[in-house]
Length: 191
Image (cartoon, rainbow, N blue to C red; front, side):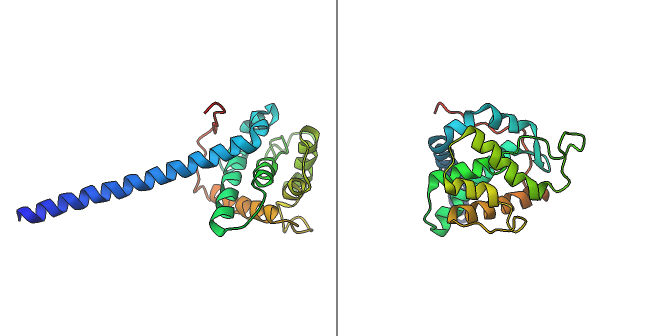
Protein backbone atom coordinates (compact mmCIF):
# COMPACT_ATOMS: atom_id res chain seq x y z
CA UNK A 1 0.00 0.00 0.00
CA UNK A 2 2.77 2.42 1.00
CA UNK A 3 4.75 1.59 -2.16
CA UNK A 4 1.69 2.24 -4.32
CA UNK A 5 1.35 5.70 -2.71
CA UNK A 6 5.01 6.50 -3.48
CA UNK A 7 4.60 5.39 -7.10
CA UNK A 8 1.45 7.50 -7.40
CA UNK A 9 3.25 10.57 -6.07
CA UNK A 10 6.11 9.98 -8.45
CA UNK A 11 3.74 9.68 -11.39
CA UNK A 12 2.04 12.94 -10.32
CA UNK A 13 5.45 14.61 -10.19
CA UNK A 14 6.29 13.20 -13.62
CA UNK A 15 2.98 14.44 -15.01
CA UNK A 16 3.66 17.86 -13.57
CA UNK A 17 7.17 17.87 -15.07
CA UNK A 18 5.83 16.84 -18.49
CA UNK A 19 3.23 19.61 -18.32
CA UNK A 20 5.85 22.19 -17.29
CA UNK A 21 8.16 21.10 -20.12
CA UNK A 22 5.28 21.53 -22.58
CA UNK A 23 4.58 25.06 -21.28
CA UNK A 24 8.31 25.91 -21.46
CA UNK A 25 8.54 24.71 -25.08
CA UNK A 26 5.41 26.67 -25.99
CA UNK A 27 6.77 29.79 -24.28
CA UNK A 28 10.11 29.49 -26.07
CA UNK A 29 8.37 28.96 -29.42
CA UNK A 30 6.19 32.08 -28.91
CA UNK A 31 9.22 34.08 -27.79
CA UNK A 32 11.12 33.04 -30.93
CA UNK A 33 8.14 33.94 -33.15
CA UNK A 34 7.89 37.43 -31.64
CA UNK A 35 11.66 37.89 -31.92
CA UNK A 36 11.41 37.09 -35.64
CA UNK A 37 8.53 39.55 -36.05
CA UNK A 38 10.49 42.33 -34.37
CA UNK A 39 13.71 41.50 -36.23
CA UNK A 40 12.07 41.49 -39.67
CA UNK A 41 9.24 44.00 -39.37
CA UNK A 42 9.73 46.43 -36.49
CA UNK A 43 9.02 49.33 -38.86
CA UNK A 44 5.60 47.85 -39.68
CA UNK A 45 4.80 46.97 -36.07
CA UNK A 46 5.61 50.54 -34.95
CA UNK A 47 3.81 52.38 -37.75
CA UNK A 48 0.82 54.52 -36.79
CA UNK A 49 -1.34 52.99 -39.54
CA UNK A 50 -0.56 49.44 -38.44
CA UNK A 51 -1.33 50.41 -34.83
CA UNK A 52 -4.64 51.84 -36.04
CA UNK A 53 -5.69 48.36 -37.21
CA UNK A 54 -6.29 47.59 -33.52
CA UNK A 55 -9.51 49.61 -33.91
CA UNK A 56 -11.02 47.46 -36.67
CA UNK A 57 -12.57 44.03 -36.18
CA UNK A 58 -11.59 41.33 -38.66
CA UNK A 59 -13.55 38.16 -37.82
CA UNK A 60 -15.64 37.54 -34.71
CA UNK A 61 -14.07 39.68 -32.00
CA UNK A 62 -10.49 39.65 -33.32
CA UNK A 63 -8.96 43.00 -34.30
CA UNK A 64 -7.22 43.20 -37.70
CA UNK A 65 -3.95 43.89 -35.84
CA UNK A 66 -4.11 40.62 -33.91
CA UNK A 67 -5.29 38.70 -37.00
CA UNK A 68 -2.28 39.87 -39.02
CA UNK A 69 0.16 38.96 -36.23
CA UNK A 70 -1.52 35.56 -35.86
CA UNK A 71 -1.24 34.98 -39.63
CA UNK A 72 2.45 35.92 -39.55
CA UNK A 73 3.05 33.52 -36.65
CA UNK A 74 1.14 30.69 -38.32
CA UNK A 75 3.04 31.32 -41.55
CA UNK A 76 6.36 30.89 -39.75
CA UNK A 77 5.10 27.73 -38.05
CA UNK A 78 3.84 26.25 -41.34
CA UNK A 79 7.12 27.03 -43.08
CA UNK A 80 9.22 25.48 -40.29
CA UNK A 81 7.10 22.41 -39.57
CA UNK A 82 6.71 21.49 -43.23
CA UNK A 83 10.33 22.35 -44.01
CA UNK A 84 9.38 24.76 -46.80
CA UNK A 85 12.38 26.92 -47.69
CA UNK A 86 11.41 30.55 -48.15
CA UNK A 87 12.38 34.13 -47.41
CA UNK A 88 11.39 34.53 -43.79
CA UNK A 89 11.60 38.33 -43.98
CA UNK A 90 9.24 38.57 -46.97
CA UNK A 91 6.94 35.94 -45.48
CA UNK A 92 6.57 37.91 -42.24
CA UNK A 93 6.23 41.33 -43.87
CA UNK A 94 3.69 40.12 -46.42
CA UNK A 95 1.67 38.39 -43.70
CA UNK A 96 1.59 41.53 -41.54
CA UNK A 97 0.45 43.68 -44.48
CA UNK A 98 -1.98 41.23 -46.14
CA UNK A 99 -5.04 42.97 -44.60
CA UNK A 100 -3.68 46.53 -44.60
CA UNK A 101 -6.94 48.03 -45.90
CA UNK A 102 -7.22 50.50 -42.96
CA UNK A 103 -10.99 50.72 -42.50
CA UNK A 104 -13.79 48.89 -40.74
CA UNK A 105 -15.14 46.63 -43.46
CA UNK A 106 -18.26 45.93 -41.39
CA UNK A 107 -19.37 49.61 -41.47
CA UNK A 108 -21.99 49.94 -44.21
CA UNK A 109 -22.11 53.74 -43.75
CA UNK A 110 -18.48 54.42 -44.56
CA UNK A 111 -17.33 56.10 -47.73
CA UNK A 112 -16.55 53.73 -50.65
CA UNK A 113 -18.39 50.81 -49.03
CA UNK A 114 -18.12 47.63 -51.09
CA UNK A 115 -20.34 44.63 -50.50
CA UNK A 116 -17.66 42.38 -51.95
CA UNK A 117 -14.92 43.19 -49.44
CA UNK A 118 -13.32 39.74 -49.90
CA UNK A 119 -12.68 40.46 -53.57
CA UNK A 120 -11.62 44.12 -53.20
CA UNK A 121 -9.51 44.38 -50.06
CA UNK A 122 -6.31 42.71 -51.35
CA UNK A 123 -5.89 45.48 -53.95
CA UNK A 124 -6.67 48.18 -51.37
CA UNK A 125 -4.23 46.64 -48.89
CA UNK A 126 -1.53 46.54 -51.57
CA UNK A 127 -2.05 50.20 -52.51
CA UNK A 128 -1.89 51.26 -48.85
CA UNK A 129 1.23 49.18 -48.20
CA UNK A 130 2.98 50.54 -51.31
CA UNK A 131 2.41 54.11 -50.09
CA UNK A 132 4.24 53.39 -46.85
CA UNK A 133 6.81 50.67 -47.59
CA UNK A 134 9.23 49.52 -50.27
CA UNK A 135 7.75 46.14 -51.15
CA UNK A 136 9.49 43.27 -52.88
CA UNK A 137 7.74 41.34 -55.64
CA UNK A 138 7.09 38.49 -53.22
CA UNK A 139 5.54 40.80 -50.64
CA UNK A 140 3.29 42.28 -53.33
CA UNK A 141 2.29 38.78 -54.45
CA UNK A 142 1.44 37.79 -50.86
CA UNK A 143 -0.75 40.84 -50.29
CA UNK A 144 -2.46 40.81 -53.68
CA UNK A 145 -3.23 37.09 -53.83
CA UNK A 146 -3.86 36.03 -50.23
CA UNK A 147 -7.59 35.69 -50.92
CA UNK A 148 -7.13 33.05 -53.61
CA UNK A 149 -9.37 31.52 -55.00
CA UNK A 150 -11.41 34.77 -54.77
CA UNK A 151 -8.54 36.46 -56.57
CA UNK A 152 -8.47 34.96 -60.05
CA UNK A 153 -4.70 34.60 -60.30
CA UNK A 154 -3.17 32.10 -57.85
CA UNK A 155 -0.11 32.98 -55.75
CA UNK A 156 3.17 32.74 -57.64
CA UNK A 157 5.62 32.12 -54.78
CA UNK A 158 5.91 29.79 -51.80
CA UNK A 159 5.58 32.64 -49.34
CA UNK A 160 2.23 33.69 -50.82
CA UNK A 161 0.92 30.11 -50.68
CA UNK A 162 1.98 29.82 -47.04
CA UNK A 163 0.34 33.12 -46.04
CA UNK A 164 -2.81 32.21 -47.98
CA UNK A 165 -3.00 28.93 -46.06
CA UNK A 166 -2.26 30.55 -42.69
CA UNK A 167 -4.87 33.26 -43.37
CA UNK A 168 -7.55 30.65 -44.14
CA UNK A 169 -6.66 28.72 -40.98
CA UNK A 170 -6.69 31.80 -38.70
CA UNK A 171 -9.88 33.13 -40.30
CA UNK A 172 -11.63 29.81 -39.73
CA UNK A 173 -10.64 29.76 -36.05
CA UNK A 174 -11.77 33.37 -35.62
CA UNK A 175 -15.05 32.92 -37.48
CA UNK A 176 -15.93 29.79 -35.51
CA UNK A 177 -14.88 31.69 -32.38
CA UNK A 178 -12.31 29.07 -31.48
CA UNK A 179 -9.79 31.88 -31.04
CA UNK A 180 -11.17 34.63 -28.85
CA UNK A 181 -10.19 38.27 -29.18
CA UNK A 182 -8.31 39.43 -26.13
CA UNK A 183 -8.51 42.98 -27.35
CA UNK A 184 -5.11 44.40 -28.09
CA UNK A 185 -2.03 42.43 -29.03
CA UNK A 186 1.15 43.85 -27.59
CA UNK A 187 4.61 43.31 -28.93
CA UNK A 188 7.13 45.23 -26.91
CA UNK A 189 10.03 46.34 -29.06
CA UNK A 190 12.49 46.75 -26.21
CA UNK A 191 13.29 43.17 -25.23
